[in-house]
Each structure stands twice: as C-alpha cells, then as structure tokens.
Length: 419
Figure (cartoon, helix red, strand yellow):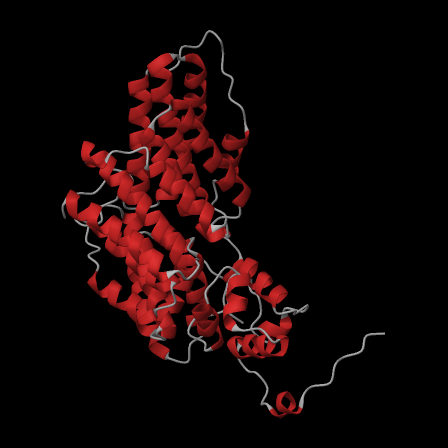
C-alpha cells in the first residue's frame, strides 16, 4: 500500500501551479534542492533553472525533461507538464523522405569489384566539393545531397581500399568531409545512432589520413552535432583543443580558420553548461581569428568567418539564458549573402535569433524571423526542433497577427494542427 506524505501548511496554502515553470519550482522546493544543484545534475546552470521556473524559456525537449523529472523525484511527467501535452509536433523529429536510403548507405559495406578501376582522386574530390555546394545553396539542400550521398560514400570507400600512399590519404580526407555532410543531413532527424556512427567514421578517416585539417574538421562537427546530445562538455572541449594544437595559425588562412572554428566549438560547449567566463574567453579567441582573416573571408564549406562568429554569439547568449544579450547580438549580426554565403546557415541563425526573442516574450518578432528563415531555406526550418515547437505554439496564439503568420508556417512546414 502506498502512503502519501501530507503537505506542509505552507505548501497546502499555495495556489495551484498553472504553468510548467511553476510546477518545476514547486517540485524543486518540495525536494529541498537549490537551483544550482538541479542545474548541475541536469548539466545546466542555475540561471537556466530560474529561467524555466519564471517562464522565460519553455518546456525542454523530452530527453532533458526526463532527466529533470528524475532529479526532482517526479515519477509521473504529468506532474510537471500538467495540461501541456507532449505532442509529436514539439518532440518528434521529422524524417526526411530519403532518410532510409542514406541509412542504407551508411550501414552497408561497399566492396566493389576487384577488376573495377576507381575514379581518380581529383574526380572524387570534385564530387565532394559539389556536394558541399549543394548543401549551402538555395533550395532543398537535404533533398539534393541525399541524391548524391549514397553513391559518393560507396565510391570513396572503394577508392580508399584501392589506392595507396598520398592518393589514399587524399581519398580519406574526402571521405571524412563526406561523412560531415552525412552528419549534417542526419541532424534534427530520428537517427541519433547514425549521427554517432558518421561522426566516428569521419574522425577515423581523418586520423587514417594523418591530416591536421581533416582532424580539425571532424572535431568541429563532432562538437557541433553532439553538443545537444548531452555529452560531457569537458570531453568536447578537450577534443577541440587537441585538434587545434595540430594547426599552425601563422601558416595561412586555412590553419587560422580551422583553429578559430575549434575555439568557437569550445565557447559553445561552455555556454551550454552555463560557464559564461569560459564561453566568452573562447569566443574572443574565435573573434580574433575572424578579425585576422578579414571581414570578406568565409571558409569555402566550413563557412568560418566574421559573419559566423557574430551569429554564434546569439546561440551562446541564448544557451547562457541571457535573452537580452542574445537579442542584442541578433540585432548586430550581418546575415546578408556576402557575410554568410550559405542559405542553410542564414536560416539556422535566423531561427536562433527567433529563439532569442522568444526568451524575451516577443512572439511577433519570433514569427517574423521564422518566416524569414523559411524563405532562406525551407528545409532548414522544417527540420529545426525549436522552429517546429514555436510554430505549433504560436499557431494557437490569442494574437490574431501572430496566429495568422504562424498558421501560414504551420501549413508550409506540414505540421499537424494544434488541438
């Protein structure tokens, strides 16, 4: 027989908790935990917990919500979520139509024929460069790269077994870059195990090539993709720093850009766990690298440059739960084609700007920025988890202007109607 503990007089006299944040605060108080303790146990800051409780940021996605419930000693999620149902719109990752084909390409082994001559290294590298152009260009970037990824992976794997010496190393570098594209394709889709697989294979290929540039690129993408998976930030930062030690900043733009990119990775990792001082220190390093490269510089496919560093300040401040600073950063960033020559990145950073404004409870700005992001890259926004949850919520807004704009996006993104 289960015996429930009686409420204290103070708790019994409280009005019922109406919002998710209020229910979190009540559960935390009942458990006798400080915000700092709860934040540490869920790999977030005390300020993040406060922002949740005060309604400045919304209900987290399901994996983090489950960790939070466990820390608070809550067995039934409904005790935290109340009437805010866990909808597919909010939590489900949308599967791209070609996901099964890409999955098959990643999990198959391509032996080829012993008599078959592989393509030349220059031809293979040209195909990889074209795949990157497809990813960053206007239009349906996921759909485009999905048509070339399976054959490209197969041909590169076969060539890596066929060639020897420097030719093999060049093919392995191209293979590592192709796995990066696969990681990006898989992001925000229900295939987390394949993201891990492609990340590991990219680093394995880069190390087999013994190429510092390839290792640096693999370290960036492993940080970039796994940051949201809750991996220990210390391990991510250590990987980024060990990879950056292989580069020589005085050797030229390629070394400096990749070095700066890894400083940015460390800044984002520290921001995710609320360590502002460390986050700002590493962001400043990336900023200095971007200044050295000049305002007109942007890496051909990593896109590191002045625009990228400024844009990631929005993400950093949002993860540090500083909505005002994030909005200020969003107002200062240049997301023109000249500063950010990638439609996918422009759309992503516009969605991050919308996330910043959502923390400041400015729904009209949120829906305007999301609509702008959709115009830049429809597939980027459609698969973005923040955008999906925000559009679903705002399409039921009491503000008719906000509701109309959000409903337009809901239909365009093929999201189910809210109840």
